[in-house]
Picture 1 (cartoon, rainbow, N blue to C red):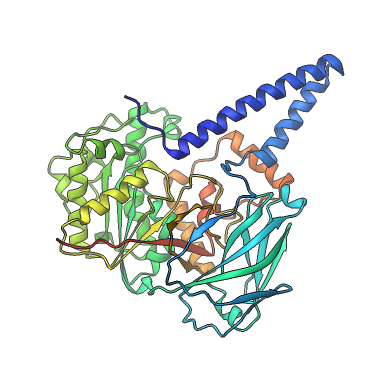
Picture 2 (cartoon, rainbow, N blue to C red):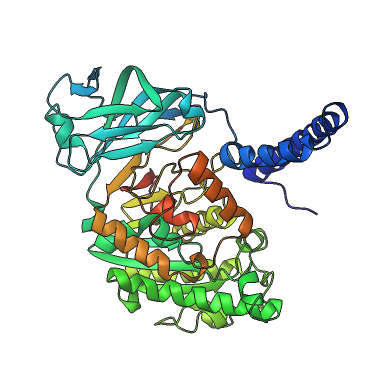
Length: 478
């Protein structure tokens, strides 16, 4: 029986079907131009059409940029009154902030004609280095700016909001969400794959009073880069898995996390859903010809329950997680958000942690979710490295969310970029088609490459903020 398609897979399938239809229509038009006008016109138009597609229509955007984002924040959120006077954002009453609150501003953004070809953005100035937050080309709807590190400028009446290739319209609404300083607590980051912890939470765990990093899978699949070295498919997958297992244990040391606080569980990439569906059945690697996790766990600083037989089963995964939670006793667990991040291993990682917590004497006081992937927009967060992060697209107001934003200094951003650069999976060059697309977008669409690396995650993850969402805390031991 085939597995049901996820929402993102359905969106991609529809996108590809529409693209095939568009190519068919375009081919008919080109043939007609060649027959009716001139023989040389079709190849010229085909090249120009391909360049235009790569520059302006290649983004995976599965909604209209004119759709309003629909967010529902906690009912007890504070709603300070604000107003725009020209470019200045002014408070109706003084703002009582300590500096670690999350501030989200709802505004209406309308793209100008240039904003259909160049990414429209808003500049926030008045608090030192100007912040830039970017939207979809052709945007015309409700969006949410992240003002979390602009509270002082806002309190002084010095915060300015200026649109570029877009205009800010109407009167804004401000939400103030208070949270403890999680950097002062004991934090455990759950990473489905090596680099997920760094992408989502390097800034948080590098500043935490105590941090633990737990990586669930070796990430051994899609090892074509290593097959080019002359390795067979299974050998390449094993080498990639060993390298990524090493990365998951070694790179956190860059942030000061001791070896004794890192664990690689060695389960197999994209096999967590199958493990969950058959909890007692060992689920082998898709590509590495392995049915034993211990090859990827041998560098762990301590033994775990799954080391007894190395069986890649859901029950072993839960036992490993319970042992780690009891050992670390984390006050904060950071893991993928199951409603926002659609990656199947990320959803299963969240489920596994929640199941592992059932019945445990130790329970975290806070659970934070993160999203390294989205259903609807593969470019989010939009904009360039070191820009701010807006809230992602959300179109279901029935889902109540509580965002939590952590600001990163430029030095912390650079340390995060170096950590990502150590990850073997982010090092290989992009395929030629992607490099050509980026070159075209740089020239015609004004998009800047990241100064830190070629992989897209250097642009998406090395930002002025790290963004998390509060998730329900388990109720504890029955």
